[in-house]
Structures are given as structure tokens and as C-alpha cells.
Length: 314
Figure 1 (cartoon, rainbow, N blue to C red):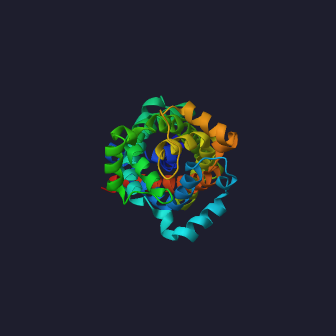
Figure 2 (spheres, rainbow, N blue to C red; figure 1 turned 120 degrees about the vertical axis):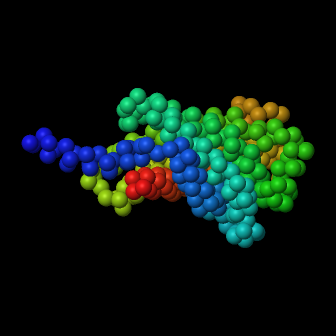
């Protein structure tokens, strides 16, 4: 009799677990949830991303290039006004939704296949994240190139389509993918650290309050996302500098490179500025990714919960 009573009490506890709650969703539901989360994240954090791009794009020996985030922000607001922080947001809007739809759906599918029945396998989370970023970067890289060129001070492009047409005509379509290899090399460790840290932080925070309610779970997702975003951003800043250099090369005073070799870019940055040049923009990058990841994961998990509750009620 005791065993029979224990089972009904145990099953509801399992049903509120963040891991099990979202199992069983269809592929398109993961895509929609990811698209919503990515769009909300990037639109909300776009001004910080603009600040980071400005700080990373221009290299040189002039000490004026080594400005902090506060001075860089003040300069943009003084010379261009608040609208200067939002140049290129249309390109981000076009790319973020589809890219994150691919990102999260591939992650969920791979996580299920790689986990081997163990939902708390950090290696599976890391490997799934790498697969997800390789797929999504193929979608996002061209729009990211356009976005960053539009973000530059005195950008010569009138808008998204003008930038796409001029880059394709003057530099070839390949220029839109010049940073793809660097992006994948950067995002692979970023995503591996990000997803593994997120799942571990979420599990640890959940265990602190095993009987957590819906509002508490939202806080857990946001906190775990912020921690994972900040850690991953700090680790991969040097590669992000390389990516920005390649995407903005030859525009508004940015260096032009003969190849898309990561080593060549690093060598030139270090030669001009020392190793300090490889961490330029790390403050706005962390300021971007911590809240961005909190927003993204909270939105994503909420969207999955909505789909799950809708399927249970139907």
C-alpha cells in the first residue's frame, strides 16, 4: 500500500523538473521557441553589441583607440545620437530569428541523441552546442557581416540591401562568409561552455529549491543563463576580435587582410597593439552576453512550457 501511495507523489515531482517538462515537443515547436528567444535577445541587447563592434573594429597604435566602454558610448551618443546605437538592427532582425530557430532545434535533437538516456551529461550538452552553432552560423554569418558593417562609424552603406549588393558586387559573395570559419571556431567553444554551464547551473539552482514554483523556475533560467553567457563570453573574446576584424575589413579605416586566416589576424593585432588588443571590447561583450543569455533562455524555456501546456490541454 505504501509503495502504491509513493508512486503518485513521486510522478508530479518528476513532471515539474526542467529537464523532463520540455521533453516530447515537436521539431517545429523547438524552432519557433528558439526564433522567439533569439529575436527578443538580440533586439533588446543591440545597443551593447554596437558598442562592442565599435571598440573591436579599429586597430592602431594611437592610444585613442584604447578607450573604455563608457567613453565609447559617450562618443556615439554625442556625435550620432541614440540612433547610432541601432544602425544595422534590421539585419539582425532578419538573421536572428531563423538562425536561433536552427540553433535551438538542432541543440534539442542532438542533446536527445547524445545524452544516452542521461539528461545531466555535460559532454552531451557541449557536443550538442557545437553541432547547433555550426548549423546556425551558416544562416547568421552573412547578416552578421552586414550588421557589423552598418554599425561602424560613418558606414558607407545606406541599409541592409545596399550593403548586401555592394559587398557582393565589389568583394564577391564570399566576403559575406569570410568570417564563417572564425565564427565557428569562436562559437564552438563559446557554445560548448555556454550550454554545459547553463545546464549545470540550472540543475544546481533547481536542487537548491526542489519544490520550485513556476516563478522560481523563471528566475533559475535567467540566473543560469546570465552565468553561462558571461563565462562563455569572457573565454572567447580574442576570437570575437578576430571575427569583427574580418567582417569589417577595408571599411571605415579597418585593416584589410589578404586571407581569412585566424593566425594572420591575431599576428597583426598583436604586432600593432600587443596582446591587449585581443581582449578589446570584453567588457561590453560580457555586458551583452550575460543579460542576453538570461533573456534568451528565459524566453526559450517559457515558450517551450507554453507549447507543452498547450499540448497537454488539447
